[in-house]
Length: 415
Image (tube, rainbow, N blue to C red; front, side, top):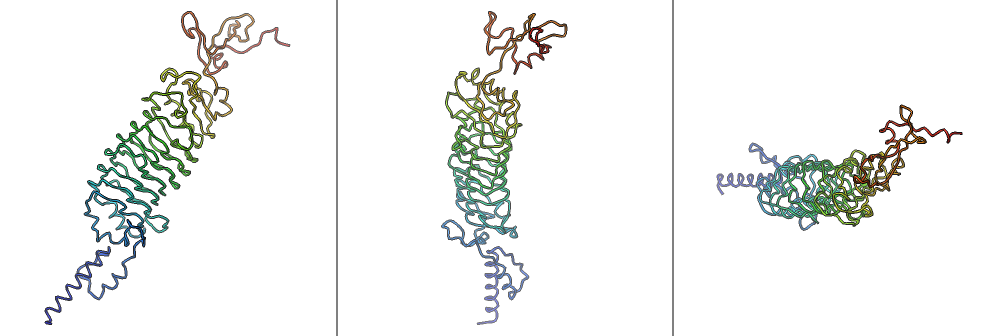
């Protein structure tokens, strides 16, 4: 063999080894001598070691698979059972910048990603993903372990039904950011993020849920969940269900912040328990409760139910709402459970009507010394119409203050 041929063979071998090292994620500059390649080979890390049929036997085949330029319709289980060490930022960048344009199947893509690993990356920013063609998201992040995940701006316009997709089912993500995601065509969010044991907050600011008809178990059994940011439009909700096994927030024992708006605005109600709203498992704060009470429909005047129909709003046991705040719901025909003691007298009746009538032996006195009696009734029919000439107040003390009267029992009753 000639010297020239031997030199060519060595150069070809060096190039092949260099390419193999780089395929494992270790860059090698052109000026590195062949005798240094052993050090680079020692720096090649082992993969996840998973035997799963859809897991990579070696995560560091990322470069081999050329994900930076990958385009395809199927991302099924692409990163399943894989973990990325915190020090390996280059792989995190590669995952975050993968080209998902045209992808249809995202199912199991991050299934068990980073699961039960202590030295793995803590966050992923996937806002650059194009999911607009996606039709399958089943278990996409199930059992995925992260501190934060950002999918803000994702376009789910190709999906009308997220039922049983369970995108975040049983995940171990602490904070999910999904602001301004396009949910305008989504009608069902059943089990969207249920049983996520580590979930603390989910930001849904700008997410339009006005077409969602089923919220069953949306985030149920998430014991650490404290905050749902944004307003959930429940205008087409086909019931929010009273049983803890079905309602959206059942088992969310730490939940403090959630806002529901337009509750049942665009649906026909019946006297059925599915229309009840049960927050009894939660710790939803007063500010949110007042907001929701103001968004409740008037069951009698707007929905055609009667005072005998039993549609119940169950407040959190931790609430400290005042009587007049609870009364707003009662005035709309709702029965209210878990009313605190200071408001309990209002839980079983609607607001009363009152009228002050001048009376020599009346128990109330005006500033000019004249006496009045204040009459109280639930409802009064007068020749001029219902409750004409009567005024609505929360209690008789409020009525007396409005009429400028002070309680003062007549002389004959004093001893």
